Image (cartoon, rainbow, N blue to C red; front, side, top):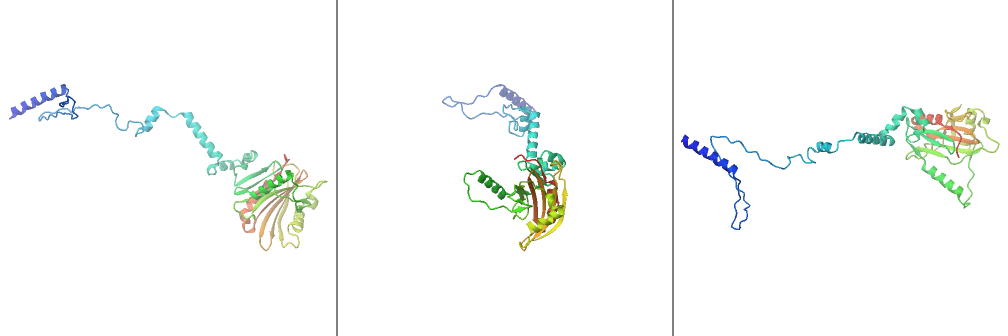
Length: 325
């Protein structure tokens, strides 16, 4: 039995070798066409180990095609990243973030250099320490205001309508005579800001009026306290108007740096009360070049403590200079 088994194994080995050396031909049908059925020869031999045949394929291994798991490595091999493009992309992103004050980053950086921001007037666009700047070169003044204040759209529309009426060929109806303060005509504010959605009780505004012929001086009314008392008694809360006023402070300063030398700024803090409202005010008056500049910031008395520091900064920042218009 052992001899027969070995003889069969040797015969099977020789048959397997002949099968590998002789190409297989597909059987043909009667018409001579190759059949679609492939033949295979499988030889099983017991007692001897045959090494497995290695199949050769021309197809790419899984994952080697572009777009597979090795896509990043393939892309790096095809087009490695350019340091110049990476630098320019990073620079552009940083520029957009700074220009748009993304997450307040620009304002935070400028808050560390408030003098530089003020000299370059970057605080017109970006808030610095919670304040932005109103700059009016045509009328010759500037001041700071809280960053959460917005420009008064109603005032801007009135100014536009007034300018249109001044250049119109239609004479129109005669306008009412404006009120007077310190003998000066008080007109619409040139600038006004207030909180979004406010009722108008909280705002800051600047009025510029021309002095009468012959000149005008604020100090003719006396010192700051005398001026403030006269203003409250004769203009803002005169008898018969139902208003009562209380003066808290009045003082004179030379103004912030960069302003016109020799100009005095008169600052008053007072309240005015009626049956329907109660407001706290800070007003600054200055005279230069035949013009009276009046800044007034007001807030309901219930919100005074919230805005007290802001209104102090507004008053200290107000300055006048030679106008361009």
